[in-house]
Length: 154
Image (tube, rainbow, N blue to C red; front, side, top):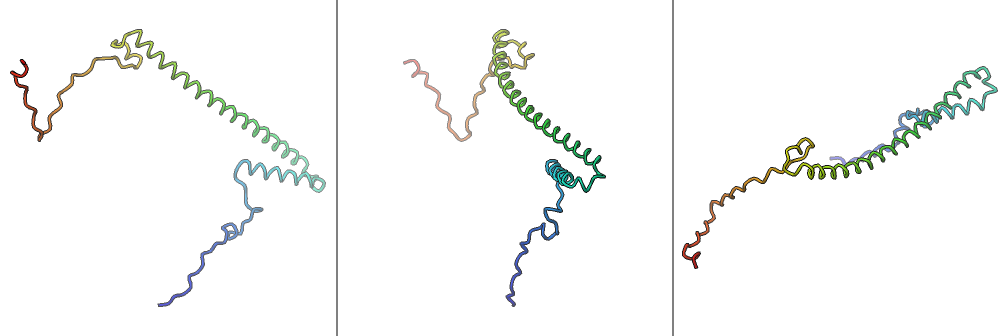
């Protein structure tokens, strides 16, 4: 029986194993892609003297990034408006539920609690209680003795 050394687990980060670093990793989110493109735009502008032949394309690229920035701001404003609308809907729903409950009571008062007309409004008319059925006695319990007729006369 040999008691050899147990190999240590490999704790090297996954990105180092794959050979990828932050510089070669591509962004996938909209904000990440936009940030990368804006950084690239800044580098293009810094080297515009060397890249004079790309001036038309660089200007178009800058216009596109400006439009993307405008649309992002507009989208943020719309999301804020959507949140405001959601809050307003919620408060109106609560108020409508309260008013609806009051109107149901008023409809019952108008037609009467026994009127079948209430079913049109989704309300249950009062139809009386069902007669109580006597509860069956337990099979092992003795029945109480009947009252004596002579005791009732006294």
